[in-house]
Length: 354
Image 1 (cartoon, rainbow, N blue to C red):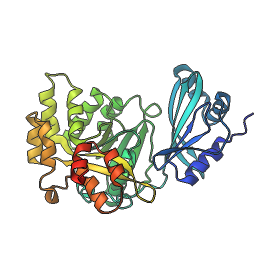
Image 2: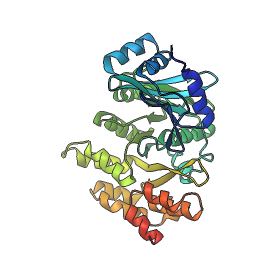
Image 3: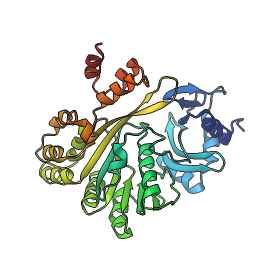
Image 4: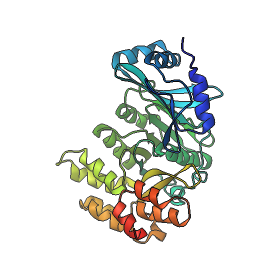
């Protein structure tokens, strides 16, 4: 019997304000605080310790799934402690686990100090809004805050499709149908196909993983729904290329035409450590206007970046470099972190005269 109590461990992760907990054999439990891994002052774990802790949290069916596939993704609600997204996997034959904390209190856009343009784009009746970035860049949190804003101000039916369901919204003015892939539906593509019959106003797609899902999202966005989705891309123009590249050459002109009319905005974000602790989202914002739509349709995505640098007071657009420079001026982030987290390090160095 190990002397580790998984619930106490998860409680301490929440108390510390950490984002993640890692249990890996031959290491102490590790937590991620402000983006940096730190060992917890506990003994080194064995595979047996981790198995005992992890199996205490799951059902027989989940255990069977893990033993057959060596992978398990699920959401976990521990009353009085919090909600977590969990992933079990194997490393060198031992079970290992990663837990991500999902806040039960959904932040508002103001809590996140989000740009004002976010409140504008979510008022659209239809179209596609993408929030992109690497794993752990706060995409789910930004999307949850956007849906929360809609929930406070408009009467809509919102269908979310996620793997697993992360933030759970209480119905305020809106009605939410949260659907977990695996529990409530077979796949993202299947859920989207049937979502059309569920009379949604707004659809959130946790991850646009494959061609079928992307196609369904574009169609939904064109047919009068506001669709939110995520991709693992690090820049706004790169996101457009990623979507187009999923399709074969002869399908691409049609996809470009669909994207040029359906795409409302792309927010590509990274989380950067703030001076004095905590992290802040660094957003690159692309908002489709007439000029951008033409560039997408005419296969000139490489020209979008320079278009994003123009007339920003009017468009609400900003490049990542501009966001970084604003944060440095405001004394929110350090120059070193700015360079480290930038997509265009040379551009930042030039702007900083380094």
